[in-house]
Length: 235
Image (cartoon, rainbow, N blue to C red; front, side, top):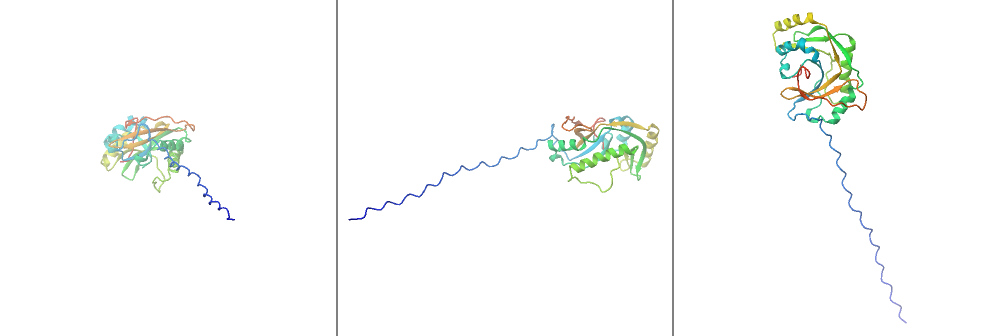
């Protein structure tokens, strides 16, 4: 008797259905610019402390003796120059800046005398260690928060520039010194520093208050430099 036909070979098990391709990871949200945004033609930025109370004292002299005053730079002390490249300044940049300087409380600053850098620059000098140390602390905190910033080897000398020898004669600077000295001292209150932006003029990109509690981010004004806005010897 013939053997029964063998069972046909079993079909191989079907492969499980392939998983649908995973969606590519979403791009992280772009860091928004500051509001209002920085002018795309801006050349550079800096951090300075504006001193509008000094304008009645030095404004007319600076107009004559410091060409940067004609570019919108009012009386000020430069603290960090240059700061972040304008195109890279974002909301995160500003938040980091605010957090960096927030621990420094507002302070009083008295300008008691005029000094010189050689024979090149005539400037108002802050009196006492407290104000000088406060300005230096602000600068150090900014550099610590932005470690890629260029920095000078020498220690910051906080100063308010009155005039430059490259813009005026020595005689004109000496006349300014003689006129200003009897009108000192001048005491002001420093309650904020400013992010200044250089286009054809220097403008205030943001106001950065001192002594602000964490989590508080007051918005800052923006506008052309004026006696209540920028001021520096930066070009």
